[in-house]
Image 1 (cartoon, rainbow, N blue to C red):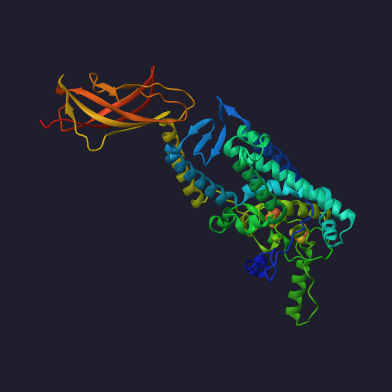
Image 2: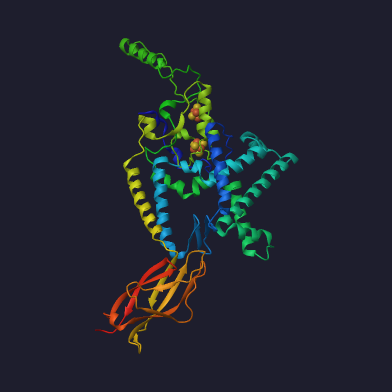
Length: 495
Ligand code: SF4
Ligand code: SF4
């Protein structure tokens, strides 16, 4: 029986640490983390926050780098314009993203949550820091919340909540900029609410939602709401690298002071020798000396945890890999002159057997699936045209023969211009150079981002119509640039 089996009764998995037995919320007051991991995450968060706030303003060839106008069904990615006609690209891209997330999680667990997820970054690097700045560390916060309403308490609470609301306003405006663009957001800000009531309501709604999430809901998003968090149970395994407590080295835990050189384990040797002697001689029974692991049970790793868990219980879904416990424990290990890394990034197999393997059959299978999907994406994106044409024979209409000896078919067309350029396409028939086209009304002009529709006749010389039903290839050209190529049916007399 190893140390893990002794301690890991898994009862902690039956409840979450932020809810008591009556179902009431237990508010978490995590101690302020400090250390090299926290510093690294802070620097990364600065870069990510700068990117997050700047991206809506970045343009490529006049197009937004990214815009996801769901209501307007208008999407830009890397400056490329996507319309509902590109839905298949969106589906394949999303599938690729899901497989990538699965692969990443199989190998690195919830690393994304700790380092990249906007929820963690805003919570731990913005709102929590404001809280520490205004109210002090966890014990000061607890004292303040228990204290009666004095002018000092009111002052601190007003400052904190005001800053929270201001940051929520900023996030809401940025979020809306991703949806409808910063120009329209600016227009909403600068016009009166009555002029832009929908936009005004969206601002209020998003601000309220973000304020609620970061001021009140907090870690509940990660521990109970986020679907990615719930996926951990099926995606991670004993080879997944995550924030892990080295129970082999740490257990049995205890506050007993000791000499640092445990590895040689002289006490254990003495105990064994005493036990051997006793069993051989029948002399007994001196109480055995307790040999402790490196964990001194200071609970600092629990005190800093923003989700309130004890990582020493084992890997848990609630752990967002924020590294706070790693820093806290490293500091303790330095003080007691033991190696850092009692809590570290490692896999279960790494802790137990010292074997680390990220190329597991599962990871390889996901990698192959991801590779295939990436190739499919490349092919689909490479074949994507700026104009999409849907040209179908008008239902219920047969062909007719003209006096000039031509066969004529009537078609309806829909042309989607996915770009910000104006096109006046020329229709060509590569397999039928003698074919003619007659528009009903004007020839189409494809204005940016718009659909143009109408009808036209295609006329073929009778001798080129060999079958009752044949296909005819149609190309749309703008100068020497092929915009789109499609095929449709052409009916003729039976021969
Ligand atoms: S911080 Fe380290 S030494 Fe302290 S309780 Fe946690 S694991 Fe044990
Ligand atoms: S267990 Fe450690 S890494 Fe996980 S959430 Fe708590 S403090 Fe962060």
